[in-house]
Amino acid sequence: MRAPLTALPSTVNRRLWVALAATVVLTGGNIMFRMAPRPPSSLDNGELLPCPGPPNCVCSQDNTPKHWVAPLRGHGSVVTAMARLKEIVRADPRTTILDSTPSYLRVEYRSRLFRFVDDVEFLANPPAGTIEVRSCSRVGYWDLGVNRRRIERLRGALEAALQSHPPQPGSI
Image 1 (cartoon, one colour):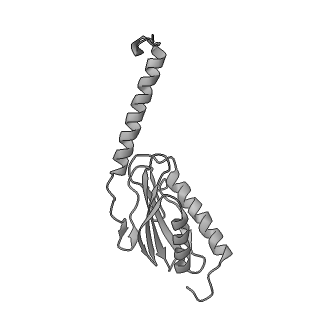
Image 2 (cartoon, rainbow, N blue to C red):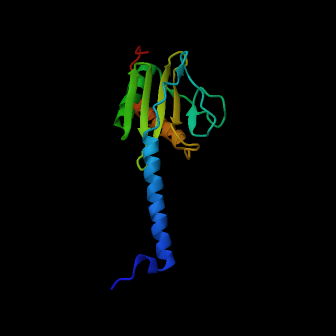
């Protein structure tokens, strides 16, 4: 005859309760994060809005050191660079393109494990020859540097794509 669950050693009971609590928290958190409302575009008067206070956002048009990230370089043709960037983003797993014009791209990225959503925007700046960027976590306080690493990874992929297929002269 088996011993009832209450007769098991306390460490086993404790482990079961911890596992049960972790499952409830993670499942409830996952549902809550999926239900977070989609914020409106951060485009305001032709510029991306600065980041909110928490360190879960980077933006090339934010002068706060903890939020600032360099814009992407267009290497001559910002329009061509935006088109290549759109191809790179479209190839990324767990992305949804929400808005796309030749000069603006708005994307949702979802994390692999917990499906957290980050809102990412790209805005062509032809006079400067750059693409302004903003990447912000939809919920939470700190993103462990995920948004900054994403922008740097996209920067590297765009640089490689533009070097392998440089824009044609006069395509600016």
